[in-house]
Length: 57
Image (spheres, rainbow, N blue to C red):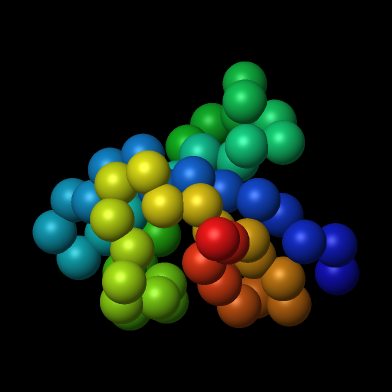
């Protein structure tokens, strides 16, 4: 599976709102924070590969 880049737009309780950075006109994604790294904050860059999210430095 090809890596998909995301940016955390907002953290809302137990969920984070993500936006794909390679398709800026795409819809946002509401993702459970339990599936994301604990260190995320608003503006964190992530990459999803093989259904695993990691922080991009």
